[in-house]
Length: 455
Image (cartoon, rainbow, N blue to C red):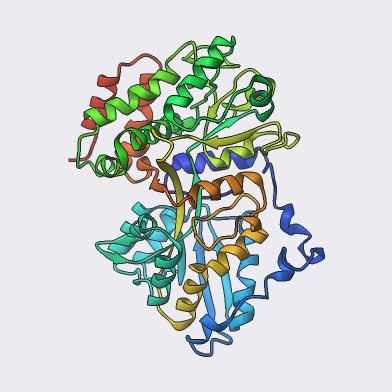
């Protein structure tokens, strides 16, 4: 379930989810030695070794990895490297560190960088490239990315027009959690457009329900779920090009596009008829933790909760998560049924060495081969690699996320607040939208965030 990203908001979110216990766990790979051929660890050696012969005899060589992905989420990662090690004779040395995001910069600048680092967001990749220590991706990796990923993903791994880092894992934020049983019993249908979503919400109100539940309290990171709401609506109502300009401050934070997006969020979260099912009024959203936000779905106290794929970990282990279970999710639709904007996050593979064994390992990680191996040994993991066979994924949320990410119409955009300057993305954006939720008007909110943008 773990996809680390580049802000304290994301770390708090993931840590909170994990502290509740992984809904699916890693049991899918725990007993893999007893599984049938074609599943689990017994099939990991059955890969084509041909692509790695071009790098010469690598027997006895080592490649070091440094990442923020730590125990127990590191176990399936290590398992997924075994076929490469068996093919090449290379030993992969894995180092996970919760302080990765600060220490990787320190290590790079001190000439103590690892061979490979899993970078949790494009902004950090840009800073690492500025140290002059990151190597451009080899031709084999570029070819894999051109084949298996969309141009938007390759752009996130590029800096200054040069391609450095292939995508790795991904997460989907554009989800709405719901009760499949309630939908079936009440005759509700999953919405295909934003207008459908509004109509569904109004129908639930007419049926005597408080449709939406939400929680944005996250300690020092309180407010981050609101930024996700706004980013989703910014992407849907103004399109990806405007979204890109907004996060780069090429258009003002308080412009008409942002105003429209935040007001659209307000139609849901500042509407007493719509929220906060199971907890109270609009203001109760600010005091409800993000971990608890969607739990009233299980009690029938609310019907809808917008939150990312990793939120599945917050439901009790006794709750069945799936299309015929106690709770599941649907894609937060676009303005039209033909549009497919996706807000999310992911990691990128940056290399600080260009030895043959490092290039070979980068090639493996950027391949469809690794994507399918990783899927077989992981629960709570997905990738936007087009070579992924969704049948190899371990749980329904992963499969739903893959369906969204691999939709040919999908337009993926990284979480904007993770790409903005920290003074905005991890400070005023959180704080001012929280103030907005508890009574501050839209104009004042956006003006204050705009004024905080570094000159």
